[in-house]
Image (cartoon, rainbow, N blue to C red; front, top):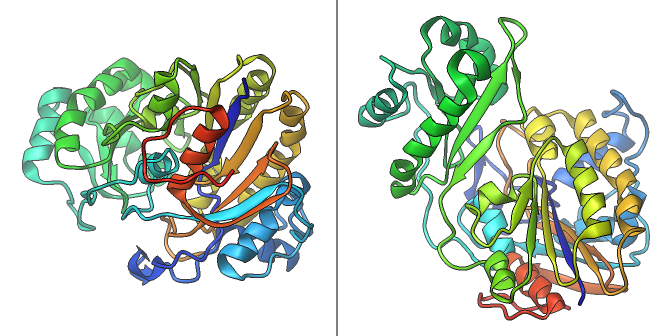
Length: 402
């Protein structure tokens, strides 16, 4: 039986979303945002030369059709990404009313989000008093720190020392539907932080807040550093997803990265986590060892979390080039009949205003399906196509493009 590898390059969008004007960054619409095209243009013009130089070099993805997918999605120029496609290629459009991680992943897995997410107002303080009281009760503290929209790395710099002195958790949010809690792994305790987030999650989920995120960190003043022990407590998908379809057919679903958290472990057989370099080793190993008929679903988050939100164009380009260079290690271990599909869940244009995700179409490129232009498709069509490749029934609105 064939296997399927669905690899989500977190935030690697390709512009052109028809409703981008309805989504905002720093008070300005996302119209024109284009993660891949703008990185390629910055590289070609010498504006992304920190730790690298020259045009963006991602020949393995481009050979599948990545540059062509960007041009299809948005019409933007893609200097350095100009190869004739040799794989399956197209671009996907999202319908869920969000540009966040759960919306993108669930819809890629065949299930659009049927509700509007709750986001906290951009004011200081931003959380309602009764919610703050509940956090304090569960944490056993007299107060919280933060209580505002903030960057996760900056808020631990601003509040970390006070956190060590008071023991109060650092609570913050963003324009996404999230409630994030940062705490020191030793001083506050990692297990205590995870329990706090787990206990708080049902209340936030009832409010249609998508995720409660544990953000542990270590170190001391001027040297705080987040660890890889992040955990997302996500609201459950509203109906069975691709993962459930595959499991119902008696097949294993192996999750790499934060996939297990995003899907609340529904339909997931097992999960491995770590920084992206470790996740790549897990993906390479899965290509070698995963059983026939398996679904392997991976999320590589550092494009988004380390470079996109920080508007680091050079860093984002370096990450893309590193990732592309690893692809042959995966493909050389694949078997006849396997499908390796690369896509994304939203955009995060590092040249854009603000620091938040950007509303974009996403590329869809694949190894193992031959040369095939699929054109403009929906996110839901990705899940339906993976199901069709595996020979399992799909139960969502998507249609296979295979």
